[in-house]
Image (cartoon, rainbow over all chains, first blue to last red):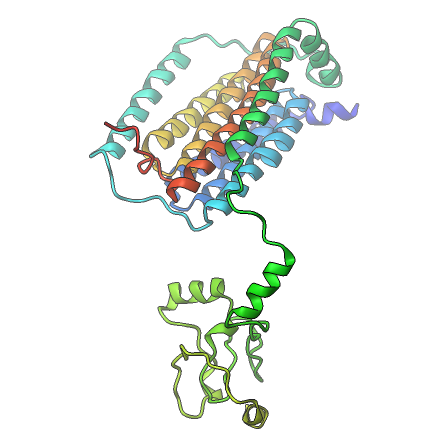
Length: 280
Length: 100
């Protein structure tokens, strides 16, 4: 058996129908989840599931080249682009539940049902013949035959596509470009700004205790209060979102029981600090 | 036995789900993903019909659809990004400056 045959129509009938049903259920479920998921990142992951299932189906239908293009271009490039933009916009961006147009969701579902009925009627009435006997173009020489078609019959659309791609790349560069309105600060200016600021030294690291050494544990100041500066604001915000308060050090390390983060974060005199620090 | 009709039916279902997503969702990025789902569904129908007719024209069209979808995503996401920069939101309801 040639290598191309494995991907293409070389599958046994039972294997093919099993693969079809598993993949179709998976892709429809993932598509439904994509419409229903509230967070955009979940949508992206579910879209990847749909795209990969479709890639396997292309291979089953005798299109090994398109199967690979689907994986490389769609799942690899397009979806990664989506994820990049999601990271810029904010991973936790959610859909608002407020309906600007009243009854939009119900109307959308009704339109969807209508569309499904209409398209099902069309498919049901159309006579879609059985698969034609698969020639070599659907397995071993798929790539060569596609290339021949693209560079003979479809050579003009192909050239237009290249113009489109160049225009799209330029358009994306123009749209995403931001003109710098202030001169770029030099290293000298950055250093001066840092010395003049209230925090010229590096920020304190997170606390390390006998039982905890995670980065969400704030370090303790010499007076025993947790230091708000020692936890990365990103982590602190996440913990505050889930628990409603600033991350606190483990309780057994506190003698006075005060878990109030100090706001002043003043530099305590350093003579006492190593003595105090030895207690912890 | 899986016939091409099965694949076309699946593509119809995926297309409708994508259309409902475009109509019902508010986040512009999710709307974009649903558009991609619709394009993928149409591609599946193209490949299935190529199999029915026994020639590769459908696969070539599906290939072109993929190329154009890639270009569309690039420009669309750049527009989205510039809207997000000015309005600090990815919701399609917040881009309302052109409303009378």
